[in-house]
Every structure is written in C-alpha cells, then in structure tokens.
Length: 254
Image (cartoon, rainbow, N blue to C red; front, top):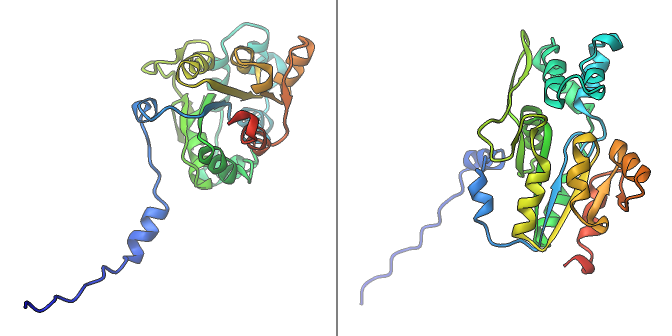
C-alpha cells in the first residue's frame, strides 16, 4: 500500500486579492449580447439619472459664459447639435485632475447604486447605461463605486491643458450624429432580446427612448418628467436611481 501524500493547501496571495478587488473589467458589446436571455433589460441614462447633478451643468457653473455665447443655449435654440454643445462646454474646462475629481463628486452618484445594481442582476435584470455624455467621467465614477455595467457613451480624453475632449463614437452600432449615441436604438435592440424593457432618464435626448416603452416601465425625473407631464404621458417619477430597483424587483415584473 502506497503512503498517502500530504494535501497541500494553496495559500491565498494577499497582493493578488487586493489587485483583483480593485480590478476594472471592460467588456465588449458581444460579451453582453451573447449572454443568456435576461428576465428584463433596464436602459438607463447617466447624468441626472444615476447622479443628482448633470456634469455639463456643473461645468457651466464653474466656467460661465454669457447667454449669447453659451453652447447649451444655442442647442436649445436649434442652432447646433446636442453633441456639439456638450463637446464645446467640456472643451472649456481648465483644471487639474484633483479639481475635476472634486467636480465629479459634486455630481452625487446615488450611494445605493452598487446594491441596487446587484439586486437587479440577482433578479435577472440586465442594466445598460446609454448616455449622450462622455464615457470618460462615467467610467471613472462607476469604477470608483465598484460597479461594472455595460456603457454606451461618447469617448473622450481629459488633459488640464485642453479640457475634456469628447469625440463622436463613429464605430458604435448606435452612432447618431446629433447626440453621439442613439438611445432609442439601444432600447429597440433590447426589446428584441427581452420581453420586459424599462427606461429611465432625465434630459432632452431621453424623450424618444422613454416613449418607446410602456408607461409602467417608464421612469423619469427632471426635464423628462416635465415634458412627459406636459404631453400627458404616463410615467413613474423617481428622485434616486435606486428607487427604480424597488419597482422592477417586485413580483409583477418577474
């Protein structure tokens, strides 16, 4: 009878544990579209929806312009695209990284976002961020919160000398020249992949995608809530993004 060999336990490497805990995984579109069919899909705006404040508003407050020179006023008047307005506003930033991080904190990401996302995923929901803003600050905030989500937004790079340089996502299958990302196209694709699709938003680019889902799965605040009310369209009002999780994880949505 051969002597038994002692069982060796592999000791966990504390350094590896720390590295893995802080790892940020970037997943491609195909990683999500080839996953098994979800119970439902929530398409969510970011600025003013997952956060209390909109980044472009904070930038305009910090580096103000007279109304006649304000890119946002030109957009509202129909004299430039939404993308052009935001790109010009972001390009005016002149600050170091520490100042920008302070500005990002002032956006006030919902502190319950990590637990709400986890609860939605546990209930079988897939969450997609669809934003006409810039992926640079969206990914920065989500990473700091430890949240991994599928994000469709305009790419960009920041430097203290040139501000936040936002670019059109011309290679995205959701490309739209007006806003960069076509949120309505994302919702339409989601409706081909799941029976239950919800949308939550805040601003002007959110109207079309919001109207493409039933009122019982249409969540709004800010400008979008006001516009839907004016049109007498049904919707569910929210103040914090995590409130939506409570709605979608109830038995009637499962």
